Length: 77
Image (cartoon, rainbow, N blue to C red; front, side, top):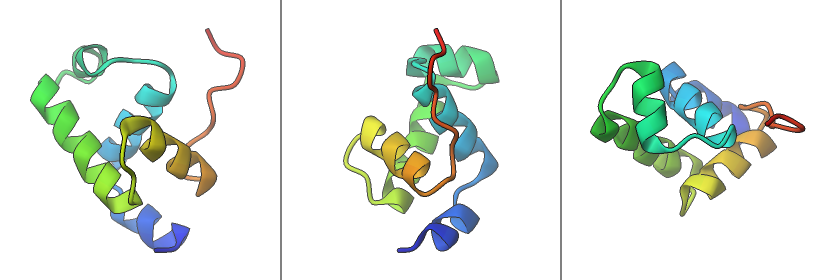
């Protein structure tokens, strides 16, 4: 799967969730930030992982950054 097909298949919410994971947020923190349930967060994470061919949350974030779908969180605390 190339980056362009993944980009067109990832929803905006999936990208939002991955970006928040990249910034170090837990599912609970992401749920609170986005105003959705933890189950909803995990649903978006799992969908993004499938689309990216990732085995873990961290792998999904790394793949999304590699494909240019997310900005890396460099130097942020």
